[in-house]
Image (cartoon, rainbow, N blue to C red):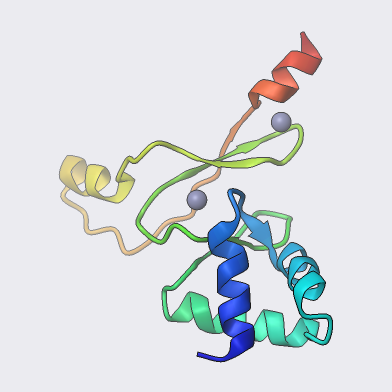
Length: 122
Ligand SMILES: [Zn+2]
Ligand SMILES: [Zn+2]
């Protein structure tokens, strides 16, 4: 594994959030100022392919990167765009058991209003 790839992986693994490539690049640059944005994008692609991280496709927004590779779902706040993990719940298994249809993949966008935004509204 190259030094840059290790650096990017460390950033994602130490983050509590689901970062965009731009955010990852920004952090990587603080540590290694010579790193190029193309290097970050290329390594993110390779790591997602190798299933070291998970790429999350967002509707009308940049992809996010997730250190948690086991199956899990996300909820997105409609107000601030914050993305959170849902507690472990295997939807694919659930649908397959309920319907007998083998699910190859799906794109699910669960929208809600997060606690912080609820406070502002109240
Ligand atoms: Zn919010
Ligand atoms: Zn996640």
